[in-house]
Image (tube, rainbow, N blue to C red; front, side, top):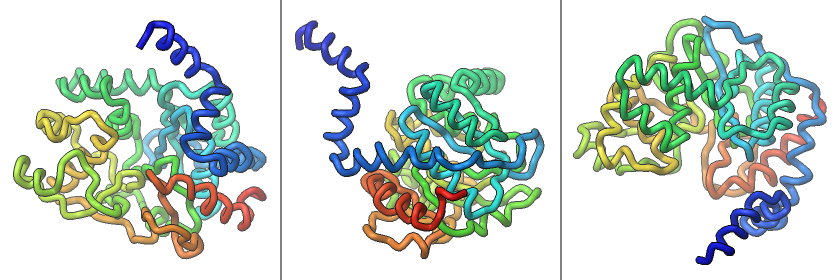
Length: 315
């Protein structure tokens, strides 16, 4: 490839119009139009209150915002507030420096939340890893930003328990399991039940190579656990194995599954906290749905449209 072509491609990637064209081709014109016209409608709603963040509470809701997903994140949190009545303490982890306008909108809509910018997350993780001599963890957070989720989730959390929710989840009915979390540390880690086993290694390899039996189909996009239930020292040990320390988007989920399975604390939330490849699922029968991977387009055409019909824009 010539230097001119390389320079042209680099320049095009920096142009908003080119990125829009590329995105429209990748996801299809109908989904692109939904995202352009439906997603911003959530910004017409009033600011959503949560319990003001103070250290030492019983439970915090944590989520992570990337540059491209701040609007779905807003839908997720507004839908959760709609079914819970009031959000618990809220912590929003910012990754890869979202646009200042996006951060300003999030601060406006969630005025009581604590925001953890990427430089603060890196500093907190680096200080913790250096203090505890977790050299593999230190190396991996630079190579695989998704591990910021695993590291800073624990280090930045000040409450006894936490709930983690990815930005591509929508809520339709009351999450009773969330509402039952109290001041006592949870003795299990409750994950979404995945459609299969999605890790950097197979359950057979985990059993043979590591002596760990992964018996639950675990998806870490939505989970509920105590702050101390994942030991970063165990993460450091697991990263030494080449089948675990593989640079792809599954490493965080793999590490959480291995840690919980090794300690015998892995469990699943009810199936009404759904992650499924089934099309046209009735949202009214679910607590929530995680629109991960190939089902992402249904977040707009199914989940958001259902929420609009049921009054989310009136809150």
